[in-house]
Length: 239
Image (tube, rainbow, N blue to C red):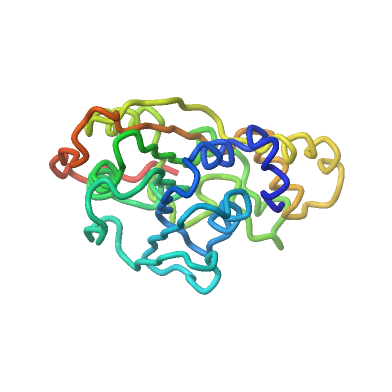
């Protein structure tokens, strides 16, 4: 779906609603950009923004034109930008792949401008109890149960993210279930069809597969956020 069509109605998609609220001409950093699909959607919605991306591997040739890409390990590497650089930071489906979050969250808090916002999205704990997509769509590479993706390390809850962000001086703006309502409503048409990727995408938006939390750096707080000392890695969630 081209997010250009969401410009008049960004509230139809949770992620689009967050991106749409970025100041005109602002700087947005996407952490864990992977193949760039979501980053390209953001550029469709807001071509006026200055995009930056970080990924351990990444496919920068697929990112929006002019996007500044940095290859980095977000569990270990500091990022090259100065304090208070970004109006918005997005982190879509990355934290569940990490053993530890302290480096990532410290950098997020450091890089946000006063008044800047961050958005995290990650699989909801309910995904631990969903059936595997392999049971009825073995030919489709799709993650329905949390463990369908072997690179998932553990479920990261909204409560954990909220606590960690607040410890770094950020104010929670909201949290909930991420959905694109157009996809969610199409579930009632596609559920009777063959088990295609389109049908599964509609299904996860109807079920509320992803959880989200957004936070903001208060405008009156000094831009260089205090770092939280590293913690011991969490144990992986049981299958």
